[in-house]
Amino acid sequence: MAFQMIANYHTHTWRCGHAAPDERAYVEKAIEGGYEILGFSDHGPQRFPNGFHSGFRMQLDQLEGYIRTLTDLRAEYRKEITILIGYEMEYYPLLFPETLERVCGYPIDYMILGQHFIENEITHHYAMDIRTDRRHLSTYVDEILEGLSTGAYSYVAHPDLPDWEGDPEFYRSEMIRFCEGAKRLGIPMEVNLLGLSGRRCYPSARFFRIAAEVGCDIVIGCDAHSPDMVFDPALLASAVDFCTGLGLSPLQKVSLKDPCLALKSSGKRS
Image 1 (cartoon, helix red, strand yellow):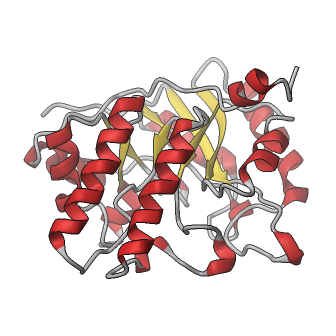
Image 2 (cartoon, rainbow, N blue to C red; image 1 turned 60 degrees about the vertical axis):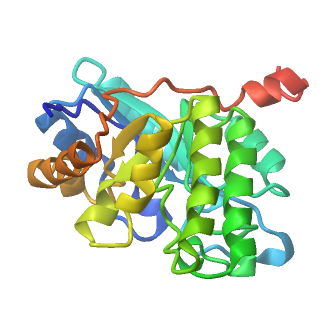
C-alpha cells in the first residue's frame, strides 16, 4: 500500500513533563518530511479536586505560553506548513464541562481523545492496566463513547491501550461495541507510532482486526515526544505494513471537529 504521511495531529511539547523542548524543531522536522499539516496536541490542563496534581500534563499556568508559542510559529511558518493548536484530552465526565470551557477561551483547532485513565487520575485506574477486570474495561468503553458523543473530539488516540488478558470473547464484544460506536459517530481510530517504536501492547493487531471488521476509519499518529518522532520513515513503513496486513487504509487527513461547538450550542460561549 502506497501511503504518504502529510499530516500528523499528535505532537507533544515539553509542558507535559515528558517530552523534548523546542517546538520549532518539531516544525522543522515536519517540513523536512514533506508534511502539509502539523498539529500540536499536548496533554491538556485539568483542574482536579482537593488540590490533586497530575504529573503528566501541562499545568494551568502554562496554557497561555502554549498558545502564544504555537500562534507565533503558525504565523512564522504559514507559507511552509499549517500548524494547528489542539490537545490530547481524556474524557472525565465530572471535569469535562469546566475543562472544555477553559480551553475554549483560547484559540483551539481540535482535540483528540486519549483515555489514559478511567474516571480520572485520582482513582489510579490506568487504562493499560485493565487486564482482567470486566467493569473497568466496560467503563473504559463507556467513557470513550460518551466523550465522543459530545462532538468535541476528532479522533481516538491509542484506542487499544487496555492490555486485556481476560476472557477473549468479552474483550471482543466490548471492542466491537467501541468500534461500532466510533464508526457511527464518524470518529477515526489511531495506529500509534510511539507504541510501535516502544514495542508496547499497542498498536494491537487483535484490536485493529475488529476495527477493520467493523469498517472504522484509521489514522496514523506519531504521538511525538521528540522531533525525531515527527518524521521517521522506517517507523512509518512499519506502521503501513501493520495496516496493510490487516486490510486497513489510513486516512491522509482527518476532518477536524470544533471542540467548542458543544459550548456554543449550550449558550455558554458566544
